[in-house]
Length: 141
Image (cartoon, rainbow, N blue to C red; front, top):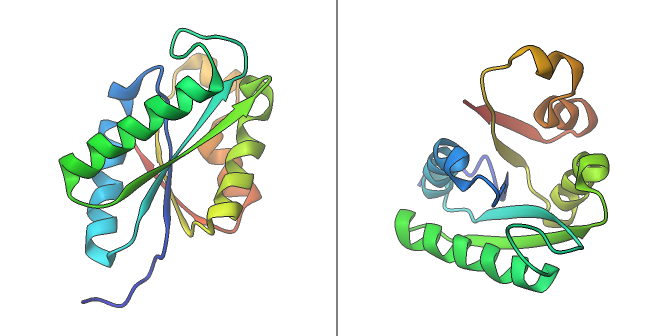
């Protein structure tokens, strides 16, 4: 067994577009398997009803099912943490930072995309976390 470089992996998850998470989940599962550590899927959801869930409780249940499906798929433990927010567009970065601290996550694996023009006007969540936390960030395109 290799020396455990990481003890806890966190993956911010977007249940609105789970298909965009597939590569990040494969990477997180591979690292988790190599170092025998858990993966925590963290989802931030709005408090009012949304197209994904009618309530934070329903979102929490969907995220837990998604985590269990990944556990079955990859053979490593995936756990879930749902965070209700009044406005994720405003406080998503700080919610993820707080979650990483609560979980003592030492690696954050994040899905990304090839930047386009609009991305220069808005900030990247991965870039913000890399600048505001001492945790390792692995960005997967």
